[in-house]
Length: 519
Image (cartoon, rainbow, N blue to C red):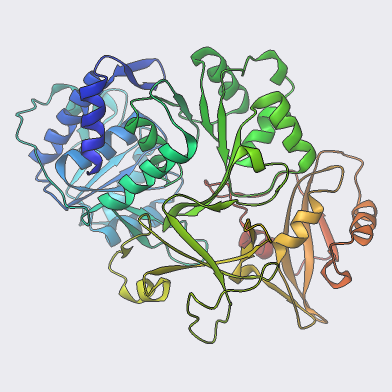
């Protein structure tokens, strides 16, 4: 099975059922499939052939999913770009991928023109402007192509499982973004894994507030709902109140939201004005939620919360199921149905085999093997060889397990704090802080210090405006699960933590911003 066949199967089974909702437009599976095919034919008429790359620089919208599936109908490779990238950053990705076509959002026209002046690799530019009057000279109009192109029935690719379906670029928080090669076999496996783990059904209505250029939004949420013939409701821009309105009006049953978004909705002053009883599951990941907040989420928002861990290189490898949420708070659960996960000795100075597992409670690096693991990095054999060894993906993430086999994220290997010669894992300090009354969110990082090398620093978002440094320090001192040398020596209060689109805290940004500043 390939990605295009997932859509075609849904069309055959549910041609008259609603496939896609965006803004004030709705498409049945039959109508949307015809639109996707017309756009695919338009790309073919521009010279796009199987294995050619098509980049799309578009906000979360119908345009982005239609482009993605048009690529699959063609046998081309989809290259989704973060629409927040600067023109220079976007141009780097397009150039690296060798994309011959760029589809761009209606609000990104100026950026697209700057990209065009920098590049010669892309031959055609497609604007998602509302009307042709706003389309730059020489560019195509998305709506005209999707509605007016004649589908001549010529497009019948049959990609192999190991053919690349998408190049998904990493966020670049640890350096220049790399193109992660997702094959058809990878993405079909991810979709089936999510269908089985979440128990998705044909009558499910999924609300998409996560970016669709991200694996968590597309491969692990949109495509699985497509696989079962569900309804995909796409929200162009996340806002807490608007999300609650749509949950109520559309009777949404499934939602993927990062912890920050869940808390924003739960603590919204008008939360109780909305009927959210249709929600049967929320899936989340990326950071922790305090036990007090989680109890409120389960009692007031949705009774079934799935907490997952994955990455662009291997989506949804660990999952905590609802029945274990409170008893194993902070855990990422256990291996999913298609995954093998081990925690091995972390030693940057030598190659460690997957057999060198650490004991429960000890911290090591997570290695993963499974059908969802990437084929490698695009045109980057060196980085591929560093990440993929003996069939195992070396994630660079630090984990521990407990006696029951549940996995706990302890931070990135690069984030480990060395203070006075002691290794400190930020996540273990964060877990303590999340239990402190008055803390809504917390992130821990090491800031430079002339005496200790680095000092443990807590960046805190308060739910109680009266919370101060002294009360946090008193709480940490009283904890039986935090050694004295691991206590935060600096506490910095913020209105919000900086996050990337997948909900992960940008610790490098915090370190750069606050290094050298007086306490």
